[in-house]
View 1: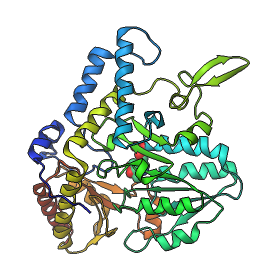
View 2 (view 1 turned 45 degrees about the vertical axis):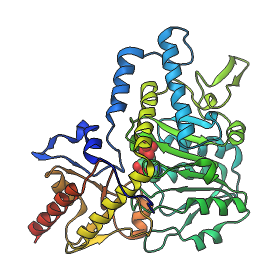
View 3 (view 1 turned 120 degrees about the vertical axis):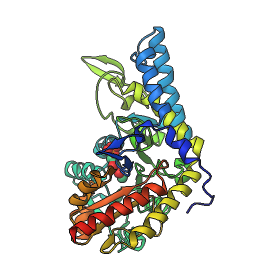
View 4 (view 1 turned 30 degrees about the vertical axis):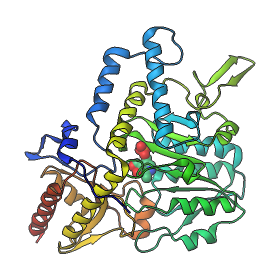
Length: 411
Ligand code: PLP
């Protein structure tokens, strides 16, 4: 729960996102699809322009000035992530193209070496497909078994059931920090502590947490953590895998190619040290460099202030939307990030999404890549409005009015 009062200058923040200042379908854009991808802060865009206009070169290999400038800036972002999530050292930060790739990396590399028949992998009912399917593939390869931690009617992980599932067969617990579909903030510290009691490895999918909640991997004491830049006001195509040094060192490479090697000959190859062992090929150099400015943007505002303000938006929206006839919130956890998933009686979620778009309001509809969760809830999807720090109560008023007028049309 937020502990400070919001003191953010939202208009000043909005001015750093020129994309917000446009009309869509003849109406001022209201962007409420931040859980899918947040808009990109100006300082991030400026960094991208600077890179492509002045510094564009490949990293680590060249000795010319542009290559050195690019390499230095790229490695500065690694240092910045190390500081941002308080890893033990910068070498524990691996760049990927997103949370999905980070989880696949662990599932393939760690999973292939360490999972064996009869081992159990625990994931929750709330997971995104990217924290389900890689484990299904790993289970198929190894003969490990996936067990699903149930949730209660509010959309919260059932800790009693979780503890019952833990045993000396549990090799891995992989859960999200914040549910993308329902917004539930999971008690990950407690989940990690319990996993450690049975010596299980823990992976935290922090894709939805990183923009809202201060992450400290040493404090959490997790083994792996994954996040995506594009949900944090940064560019697409950049993700992070944090991994504990001893685990990363014990894991085989994920992909082969340039950069991840020390020596290659036809008789055999020796691999590079971490983190490079897991960074085969040319990465998204400019985007990684620009991601540093997204973390600066978040830190300049402060996670606590962001969370407080977004919580105000959430409460405000909840109070307004509750009064709409037929409004059905999906996911009512006590601890929630700024996500409202809902249905409205007699109006299909896709129709709502389209009719809102016609009024310039961007929301997400569908299963949100959580089909097993939707099946469990007995629905095929929801409308999801997810707020970022640049959203306003005035936008929520317009959203509310739009919903009311749409419902009237449906009679
Ligand atoms: N995990 C969660 C909880 C997510 O919300 C998402 C994206 O929506 C992902 C994983 C996948 O992230 P990406 O598409 O950036 O790899």
